[in-house]
Length: 176
Image (cartoon, rainbow, N blue to C red; front, side, top):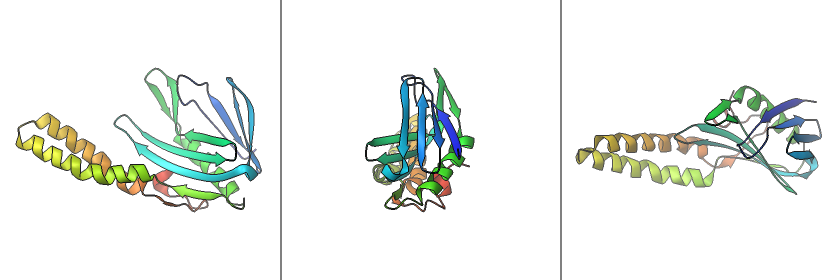
């Protein structure tokens, strides 16, 4: 075993454990039978960052011949109770990327085209809306629009679509 990570995505799923070996990843959970993901079946790995009003998400999508495995650093612990598991998520994903770097034909991708375009459009739109609301004396709405514009501005750099070096993943897409 090289590394292990576990998390629960939502109330609809049980916690799953992902165990990394040199040639495969084994996924175990109470609600599913054990699943083995052979690295020879992996086609693409995609790292993504999303920032919402509630929280930020670091995500890793592993695309195989048979489907997709989704990892994220946020663990659903209960109603309105989310745990930040970046201390185990980051090292696990780095170990996964290092192992997959040795597999021929795997593509490595970072960012999100949809988020990038939305952020580019959203930044000036929210700035304009903030200015309009401020000029109309709607200060609460102006502050809200400015806040959303700030989030959009922060998303531009992190969501920029680009190739990923699996041995040196970008710090803005993989928490330490």
